[in-house]
Amino acid sequence: MIFERIKSEGLAHLSYFIGSGNEAVVIDPRRDCQVYFDLARSEGMKIKYIFETHRNEDYVIGSLELEKLTDAEIYHGSGVDFKYGSILKRDGQEFSFGALKLTALHTPGHTDESMSYVLADPDAGKEPIMVFTGDALFVGDAGRTDLYGPGEAPRLAANLYDSIFNKILPLGDGVILCPAHGGGSLCGGMISDREYSTLGLERIQNPVLQKTEKEEFVKFKLEESLEFPPYFKKMEKYNLQGPPLLQGLPVPKLLSPEEFKTEIEKGAVVVDTRMPHSFGGAHIKGSYSIWLGGLPSFAGWMLPYDKPILLVLEEKEQLETAVRYLVRLGYDNIRGFLNGGIAAWYMEALQIDSFNLISVHDLKARIENDEEIVILDVRSNEEWEAGHIEGARHIYVGHVEENLDKIPKECPIVVYCGSARRSNIAASILKKHGYRKIYNVLGSMAAWKNAGYEVVK
Image 1 (cartoon, rainbow, N blue to C red):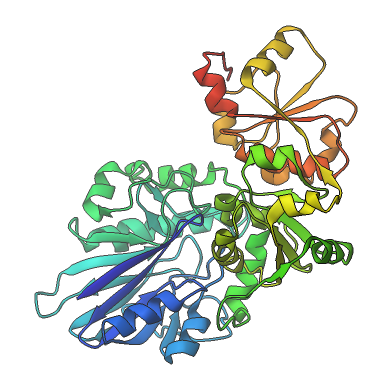
Image 2 (cartoon, one colour; image 1 turned 90 degrees about the vertical axis):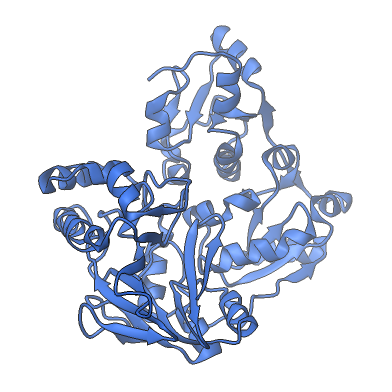
């Protein structure tokens, strides 16, 4: 048996390659799917089946792309009208590959078509070895049930309870849990950073699974408050109908400063992936600041799908990573990147912009001097409620651009988050919309606490 877990950083997406003999299956492949083909080739295997646990919301599924490479059969759960692949005929349908057997288990709740897949080795015994739960059950959490809106949430939460307690957990305490996401994913609020677990450990340790009464479980799920980025709708459409085939990663053009400027004038959107201190010191006017590692989590909040994207990178070696992050969210029109980076831009005497960076000590002094400033906290609701700077206003970074009417332009705006990265995104949005007196707090809440300054709840 060959077992490989493939993690897509940023999205915290987990997909799986399982092989036996000369046959293999892939569960929840990502769009840049060459990795599965290469694994199969290196092991002398043919990918026979591709299984999807559900119509994912946070990334583009790579099943069609992988089918093109391998001629493998794609299978989905029933309940959604997929425009590609095959719908599983019945709950409990079995598939053999090599010496192994995979059983499809309908586990609705996160979505109606959600499936889990149970792996067994018949030569060793009939007991399950692993279960691939998609977004039904995570390490430390259970799937969100709010995606169909508040009217459907009670039904979905009740279905999820039944799926977990009546179908998944009865598989046995020793069964290895293989979810579709790890810590940091938008598909759960409390997913553990630990990525290995068993059903027995989850039954004992998972906080959500301590709600063993159905009413208590449903009530807990209905009280969750999770963010719903706008790009989720695009992902749902792509994953229902089938996304455009890439057949290889896009290759953005290497653009001179003048060529880059021409593309901007035609309407392209600039994304600067450098770190906050670099962006604040000098950047191209009107560009978004999203640090490289933040692209998977935040590009979908603000980047349009109908305009070309231009990249400003810290190092040109980061180009492939940036492209992979963007295509996983369906951003295929990556027109080019700036040759020589920001230095090439200002060496050509082209217009730059900037905003101020401020330390927590300077911010504390301004507060104590009773200066007229607006302090904007752009962290999540949970972070805000755990403690914030007294007098701050709270708008999550993903909602800043749609709430500019709540942020005055006439006085200085001091933005903070957990470390200064998300606040730099917010600062770039404010700068893009004409705010002039902007300060990003270096180190933000981490530095504020390390300095011993007080937080309020």
